Image (cartoon, rainbow, N blue to C red):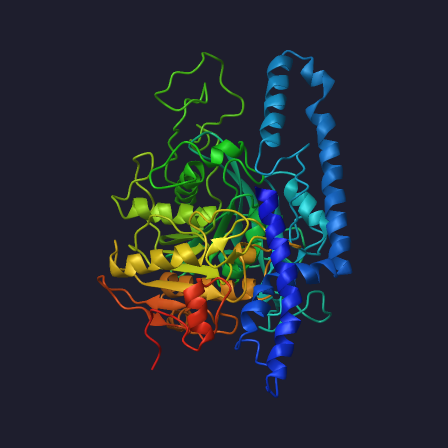
Length: 594
């Protein structure tokens, strides 16, 4: 069925591509002196439908990116080959602990093979980090080379300086200098602003190790950091943190946790982590158990079950990560010896080598969050994409229904959230921003939604058709009274919010998404009036087919104000709405400005 769906998408694209010139000719022969603009007229639904193909098309014709991709894969494969003899060292396997060591290795390899996405020898050949958003993990003074990816993939340790990205609607990425200008990297005479990325690990309540990265803005680091040398060891946290008194008068800095979409790695969201760090926030990215570089198998994304959450394991991991961020206890929900859920009988055996005690050191295996001394625990936020968005919304469901998590223990309260292409049961007890795109509706990479129907696979809480009703429900019925917004990007699909090269995405999606996410969080974490205005002001490349909206805080039912007013039809409209828009009356339910 999946292959048939993908073939249908490809056929649809070919048909639309063939029809577009004919329609343009028809309009011209009917007497038009000039073709309609790209945001109006009958041809817009066709031309905008293929916007999501622009980034991969540019990537495939970029020789520098192709050379980088090949180098990245070769270096990572070489590192995997080098690790394998160490894992299979005969002297160790034939020693007194040989049987248990062999069992642990075989279990690790088996788990990696049923990872989402499978790994062989520690190498996930389907993962490719975007060189524009890679810290200098190999300490050679150059950010974004293949060696950085290999160093990052080698384990959950290591540090690297990262540049402050400036994103543009064209897809070009420049970097902020100490003078405030945004210029291309490596330009002579420029000194670039930098932050510090620090790899770490978190043991979740199921005893599985999660791969994580903590992102420090320059203002979180002590004087003299970042250093001139590319080796950031002197600035590594916690020793490299600035004195607490210098951070917002001793209150500390806002902290944002970013949760992955399904089948994504945390490096797919480094673009957003670096953007938020540039704005002055501490950021934590991580891979939930069962994908990325975290332990576990694909089943760990779904189990154990959690109320009102499709991805029980992923929802539980977000709760664990936020507890780790603030230093709250992470209570085991499994028997640490049998790896079975508490209260469930399991086989009698010695402690499972793949299960770790989530207590903090020295009692258990969890280290203290290196950013702990710089965090303002009253200014926490969460951002998630797809599965991660559903996890964030589920967190708010628990927060709004007693404030305890899936394990019955108190949750650290978050102050704001951003859901990128995901919907699910939640509460508006804190300000929530929803983001989606014109053709968002399927997690399949080349499966846009047409007429509200996902061509690649079922939407299940994904896309405008699910997010708009949730937005309307929260503002008209609740629960909760906090501010809401719904941002719809022009022309994109479900993968608009990841930075992986060669994946379907519009050139402008990262820039527009980052602008609105950073503005929203800056408004409600920093109480910055300028950010509050930016969060509800239109910028180019918002959808012209679906309204972007905002609803100020207040008791429901409350009104929704248009950030943009629809002017065109979309192939993602229902047939009735499409006809209405094509005849000059696009539908919207928000109050136009003025």
